[in-house]
Each structure stands twice: as C-alpha cells, then as structure tokens.
Image (cartoon, rainbow, N blue to C red; front, side, top):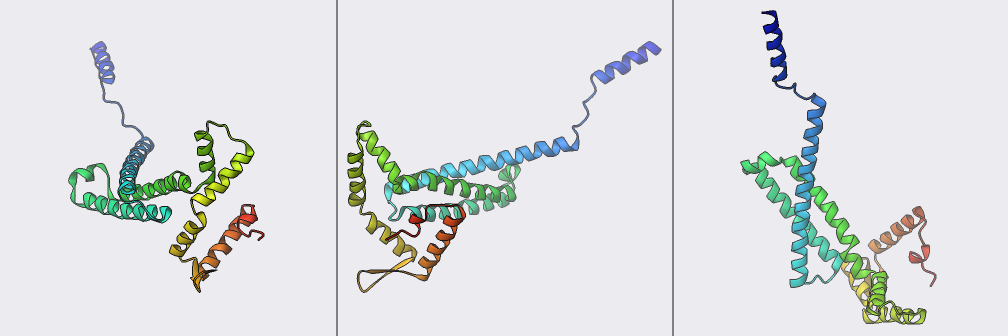
Length: 215
C-alpha cells in the first residue's frame, strides 16, 4: 500500500498542471503585447498616409511642399483618430484587439513617425542643395571638377528661382510682407522667428552667418 501511494503521488506530480507564472511575468508579457499592438497600428497608419500622400502629389501637387505635406498629415491624423474612436466604441471585434488608449497612443506615434519622415526625406530632397549636387555628380558619372561644380551652384540658384520661391513661402506663412510694390519687410512674426533662430544658433553653437549674415 505504501509503495502504491508513493507511485500515485509521483505520477500525479508528473502530470500536474504547472503553477501559474508570477504576477511580474504576466504584467511584463501584457506590456509587450500592448506595445506590439501599438507599433503595428502606428506602422499601418503610416503606410496608409504614405500611399495617400504619394497619390495626392501625383494627382494634385502641393504648391508649398512643407505646408502642403503638413496639412495632409494633420487631415490624415484627424481622420484616423475618428475612425479608431468609432471602431473602439462600436466594433466588438476591434475591442478585442485594442482599446481607446492604445488607439490614441498609436495616432501620436504615427504623427511623430510621419513628421520625422517628411522632414528627413521628401522635404529635404526638395530643398537641399547637397542633394542637387550629389545628383549632378551622379548624372555626370562623377566626372566634375571644382570650376564645373561652381557653375552647377550658379545654375541651381538661377534655374529654380530660389529667391522667388522663398518669398512666396514666407508670404504664405506671414513672416514677411511686400510694401510699395517691391519692398520686402519682416512682420512681427518674422522678427520673432529670427530672434528664436538666433537663440537656437547660440545654444547649439551653429554658424551665425546663416542667421545674421554679414551683408
């Protein structure tokens, strides 16, 4: 009888259900799943915005790249938030996957990712002289001397009418005004922008000639 009891106890321990994981592990696993859901939704929203922006620029190109892209981003952000809000309230299937707080965090992360992408790639590509210079070297099979590069610089500023383009942009943002037909003056907003740039340049020890050029 004693041997039978020992054998029964050993077998019951062998096939017994394992103890539940400690509370810390359950919290950790839940946090990982929650973060994974937020990352998945944020990336999905970014891909949708990427497709919308690309389609918009092929069908109706923005006049001012930065502000046109930012407007589209804000419109997408509002639309995505309304859709997520509606689904988390009225869709039982979506409720099983995410809640409203996860949806809000996903929208915030989507906005930050999209804004960083716009500043780093399309807007920089449109405005950067360095990109233009590299493209010129690529087109000429890396066969460009210093004098030819200087001509490329002059052609860059002449062909693209950068002065007129920048004036148009700053008029749209309200940092400058045109008085008496051709006199360009800073507005109060423009003066505040310049003063802010001076402070940032001093804090990060940037080249002050870009902020206060010696003219």
